Image (cartoon, rainbow, N blue to C red; front, side):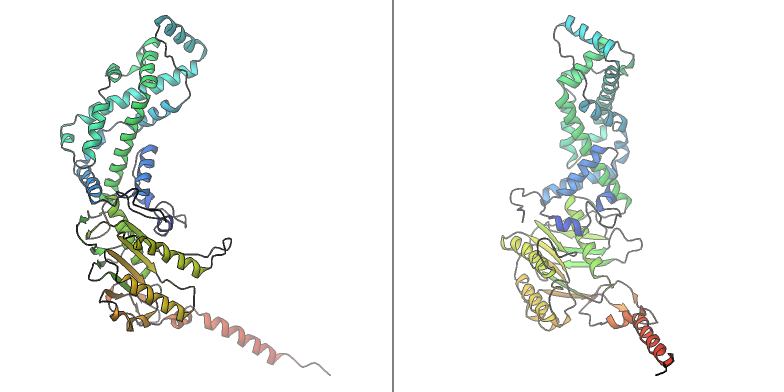
Length: 467
């Protein structure tokens, strides 16, 4: 298990949870959460956003700084249309990484001879230099005009230091040589001199400028995605771990049914029951996705959302056996629980979601394992858990768990010929058993019985052979 102690500001989130929540990739080929949030204009901005989504915050201070930046961008969105063009950004990136001849001669005669050689013998390189230098100049001019906008002086959160770094970099002496007009009409000698100043002397500075621009692009994308999807800014709380939300829903759903969430030190465990297809797994994913977005500093899909930041977020929704490693399904489940237990044992603030654990063993083992885990989870301060299960028999024992378990359920509406689901969370434990009904509704028994009847009918009508 990776440890978060080496990076205390970052949320611990492992590859399995990334996969469960489809944060960076979606197995089905649909859009991932990254795709859902990506409104960046440049490839570098998209890479910066991906890095952020790989490393969400665990620190309330860092989350708040990102929230402030996103709020400012949303309120002053028109200002950020004044950022340099994508053409200038991408052109500068290509200019710095393209293999081109450099003229770094201090002797003017040698520089002039070198410039002449580039012009005569390497004209394609020369035109690449001109094009790249033009892009770099446009980037610098665009940033000059952008960072002095009056309202940007009041930028808050992450934006303040970011903009200050841009302003400092733009005061470099060599950047002062960049004219306020397009350099296309300049002489070959002057363009190559400018290329020397930019691509040789200030290459590191230009790369740093681009890095800051990409971070701006990523922040604007996060602000735009939050606004476009109507997300609400979470309230960051202090003290013992808690999460409370109203109107929570999964952002991928077209017509979602919203539900509440409440986990705290009086109810550390949400025990979730209900038949298949009623909404348990979607509810777990919706909650985990919202909590993850909150740790990024983004808005979340809810009417309201309050939380104390955690150090580790674990999900155990989609597990599989591993034939090559000789890991059975139940062993995979046990190893997943062990990963959570290791973080809990280290005293970390953990939030873990387990969707119908211990399916890979017999009913008695599953019951005993679930009860044993719930008993231990219920005593862990500053840890919160969601635990969905079909083991409704556990309800007879949950009252012993220090009153730490909040029981909720989803159910199917059985009126009419077909089952219907309202996806509303209810208090209590579901005792619905719908397996036989679902099999009947799908006509499985009719298919099997029809095959048997056809065989019986054919055997009765078959003529007897003469002896």
